[in-house]
Image (cartoon, rainbow, N blue to C red):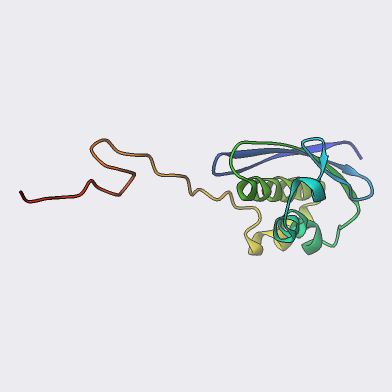
Amino acid sequence: MEVINALGRRKTAVARVYLKAGTGNIIINNRDHREYLSTDILRGKVNQPFVLTNTLGQFDVKVNVDGGGITGQAEAIRLGISRALVEVSADNKPILKPHGLLTRDPRMVERKKPGQKKARKRFQFSKR
């Protein structure tokens, strides 16, 4: 099997995922995923597509991720892995879709508007 690449995004995080047959190693920015992702929740998010499709330990994953925070990066990686697994086998699509793993989360930070303190917060109003 050749290398399959996919892109995952979340907020401002962009993850380029490279998937190939292997033993289940996940390398994120040239570091092991256990070292890069600090909590078990984040590691669980990254492994979720493999757990749902019963392919845990069958693929080696190499990820280049940039931008955003650690949670956004983990969710971007999850989307990239899900898209790559669908490329590997179309049978994975009906498994991943109901869990929302193939949907790009469109929520972004709202911009700050002029004449206001933040995106929605106003300066304090005083009648006099």
